[in-house]
Image (cartoon, rainbow, N blue to C red; front, side, top):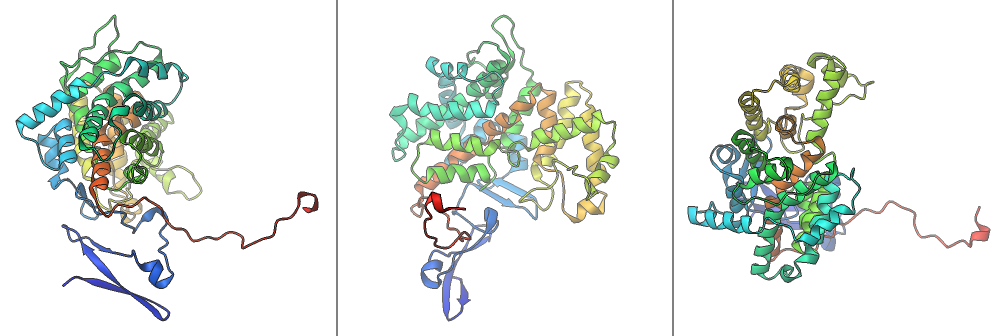
Amino acid sequence: MSETAKLVYGDKSLEMKVTRGSEDELGVEIGALRAKTGLITLDPGFMNTGSCQSAVTFIDGDKGILRYRGYSIEELAEKSSFLEVSHLLLEGELPTKAQLDTFTSRVKLHTMLHEDVKRFYKGFPKDAHPMAVLSAVCGALSTFYQDSLDIDDPAQVDISTVRLIAKFPTMAACSYKHSIGQPFLYPVNAHDYTSNFLHMMFATPCEGYEVSPVVSKALDLLLILHADHEQNCSTSTVRLVGSSQANLFASISAGVNALWGPLHGGANQAVIEMLDQIESEGLDGRKYLERCKDRNDTTRLMGFGHRVYKNFDPRAKIIKKACGEVLGQLKKQSRLLDIAAELEEVALKDDYFVSRKLYPNVDFYSGIIYKAIGIPVNMFTVLFAMGRLPGWIAHWKEMHKDPATKIGRPRQVYTGATERKYTPIAERK
């Protein structure tokens, strides 16, 4: 027998079906609410509104659980690779060795950019933010690959997916090279996915770049940890834009713009800026946290707390461990890491932060790793976008296969002026 919930409003009532997910999450189906009662739900930020049913990622914020397609993030971080995780998210299952080899070969085949795409970069100012450039170039790919824009053709969606995953690191590296006035480098497909990106970032035509296995592995780990995170702002944007039947390139471009916001993908940059501020002002963790607690002070603690997690962000635990390992193997001392460790230690013993469930999140340590391996601060969010790409595509594909999908069109409660008569301009005061 199906579960139901009942809503009563005045003399009207509505029996609503309750949908139970595979992890016992419950959702009330309210499709008939307005027609039957005249009501709509009002939920700023969609804190309690489910826009879809999804089999891609499961999060339990209270228990600190994150799973891709049923696999724990801890196990994937330890045993998998980014391209393997990408295949998992896109296809629903871990690939066999033959499937992964084929997928990897196809990605390598499409890493180059069309030469005319590179003209776009010359039109941007040198100080243009790489995320603005990445979004523009990503959207422009739909003009170069007009043979694969049909969202109802699985073969066209497949080749567009491979092209995006293959070309994203190249587009990202070109954004950086343009900003510093260096020539673009072609990908070297003898490298693995992350090593290829690092080569295009840091090598020049007159001087090679020896890719450190430690650095490549650390970057691969960060991409895995960012690969998907359920219905976040950028993923919801990709779904919403895609619901209008916009092509995959346009939908992903919109996701890049959503991720660019400082409340979403820009948070790890804010953490580094906070740590730099603490260091430059000669503060210690305790003094800085006291400023954060002062209601008369605008100082904010960045990298703590999360919209979903009310416990430790499981990704933060993995990154913290990786951060120490990377700096140790690279034999680098980091005053920022020392400050971060002190902030974490003090905050986790302070009732002010503990009572508010402000635990370190994924952004708290990721920026330190990026900085240690030489990634410029304005490229942090670009790396986030590279990682999140397979998740975006997985949700876009899932949405189009779902027969319940409709074009996104939220309702509103109007609070403006009631009907007014037009006053000629000469009579207005």
